[in-house]
Image 1 (spheres, rainbow, N blue to C red):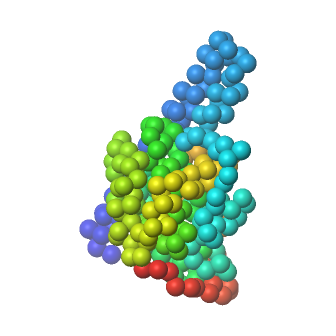
Image 2: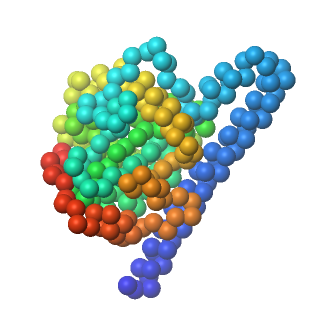
Image 3: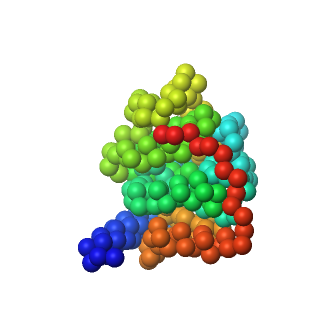
Length: 272
């Protein structure tokens, strides 16, 4: 490997680590503010403090337990909160907790998407996507929610992976809540052949899966994880602020985990 390539890979890893560190610092500041606000609330109105904490702790707003929860087609796992990509019988599972407004998630996707696709398409890994609303909670707005709902609508159409990638390829600046505009999400759907149908458009405009997304966000709040992206390989965290994970090392981890195990049976994934 040339020194230039080594320097490039080192810079990419540093950028990923720095972005993840910023995301975790932002979350810590937010939790500190919540705790401080809770202390004031205890002094002022002790009876309502538990409601205040519950309302803020999950980031982008909790689901309404009385409202219907419409899971997207093919969702799996507890409460059907997981969108699976890849062979159901793949020997390894990559769990990806993500927020479509999260810049650290975007950095992860830009570095790892080709590798993850290769692992999925060769039957080595099944990815399990779990959607989160941290940025809506931290900065306000509805872009995380609306984009996640639109991605779930794309799952209904069998085109989640392609649309997921389009959203990250076109992610706005963190402070620009462009994904709150549903017309933007519908325009981006034009980049995925066959996605923008009347059914998809209605699903996006109606927020069909909003409560499902909020329930997924609730699950993240209860998981013990505190930043996005959170990446698990076979249940073990492999990516963080001090992580040295690279596409090559991820591939090797999967190879080691799958040693002696047959690849899963892969079905065709609609092209983007």
